[in-house]
Length: 184
Length: 184
DNA sequence: GGTTGCATGTAAATGGTTACATGATTGT
DNA sequence: ACAATCATGTAACCATTTACATGCAACC
Image 1 (cartoon, rainbow over the protein chains, first blue to last red):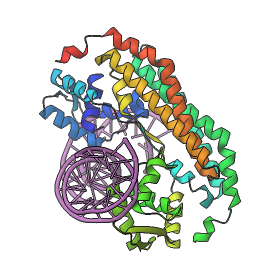
Image 2 (spheres, each protein chain N blue to C red):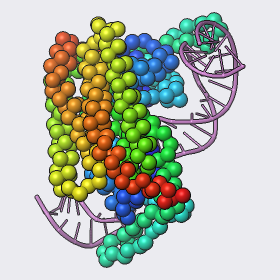
Image 3 (cartoon, each protein chain N blue to C red):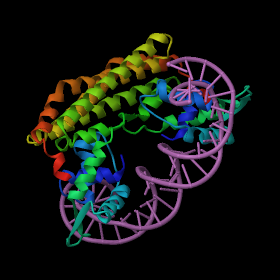
Image 4 (tube, helix red, strand yellow):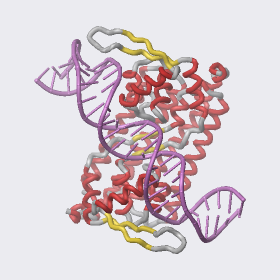
């Protein structure tokens, strides 16, 4: 999913500045399913305006750069719908932790243990955040609630699985306690 | 995670050709947590040899390009362990379907229904594949079994959640049956 | 005095994806 | 016949990530 479409989607949900779009993808409904940085957002927004898919109104602010509020145009909405018409690809998970875990036998058991415990704590934090989000916005759209619930379900299953099966991978790491030293 | 480290990890699991590494990330233990293409693998492998992190032995084959079997060196194993020493970042999920679902109100309810049903079927396929993998390799490492189980748990929770809450998002899509037409 | 939040943007570097190039074998 | 599997590799293209550049306000 390119940054241009991501921005267009954000604007469909409501007028916003580049800064606010970043926050949406960092803390909002989509934060668990996408990420996008400033370096992608600002050029994408400029391009959307050039293409007539969005409009920009400058709001001068004192002591700060002007706030540029972007709004999606009817043409932009059409383009978004066209983007939504293409068959969505499969979900992709990228997990550095899982890569690392595949080589648990090369690492000290204590480190594996800490890593897994930390990750479980992280999952639980994410779940708590989703819960508090839902509590704060009882009038959220059905879509937003669906995505929140899905994120919550995924994090919960991952946390529960790790808690239940941690001992198995730790046992394997303990079996080769000197493996890490072999490479020094 | 860059292709170089991904290849190094693959070689730590056993000597392999570029083609076989691709398969590992397409069908193997890590297939649910990473992906890598030929265009990344072959240059990465060349670089690993240049840096002394891997060795290559040509195996001439008749009627085919030589098969190049790569093997990790002790230095390569050290480099891999160094890579594993850095704190792993959080898991990242990228889901085009979830992006699309956020705009369910712009799309026909029938399409949302089909999309979700198809995705549930896909999750179940992935789960079946993991199950058959585990059945075929009863001597798999603890790490491999852990990753398979984790993938299975995540897919199951996503499939179950979608099945249980599909109706809610469909109802929202049905509420605005003419939304898609508004942009034409 | 340092960090976080607000606020926008550019430029370089990195590096992954896609298309191309080649070609035999096996299965439908 | 056509697609898929096996098998390697290059080059152009495209995009994100990262670092840089600026600067005030609020909080600890």
